[in-house]
Length: 157
Image (tube, rainbow, N blue to C red):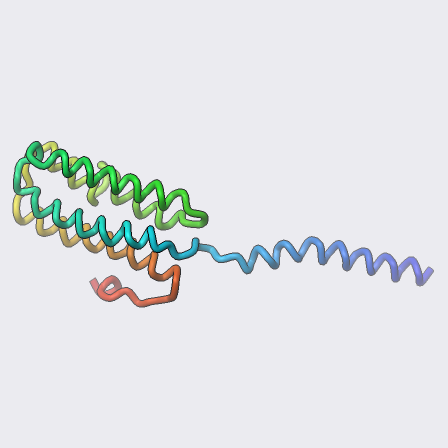
């Protein structure tokens, strides 16, 4: 009888190990995707282009439409790239907010510019600050995938 008990204990431990091993390995898996130099480049270059476009929004939308369309297409491409990376839901959500015409970031800014024809100086200045900050969040998130880094100015403003 003790032999059966010993075998039963051994079998139980093996089954328990087989159940717990995958759970332990899954717990070691990072919750966020790996750093992507391409995603970082997208964010930094699109930030510069977006802020330059906001400066040009005092002109008529129709005179800038070709450049605006190219910029928004590139923002859409950055979103699709981000969405396609594994474990990158947070970054993809930030890009979705950036491009959405019903939100207050670049997509919404462009939609308002198109609707109104031009954008006044005060509104341009305020949106430029807000959109720059949103890009800074995207950039900071990407940088922190590589190494935990404080993001200057994001916590205090």
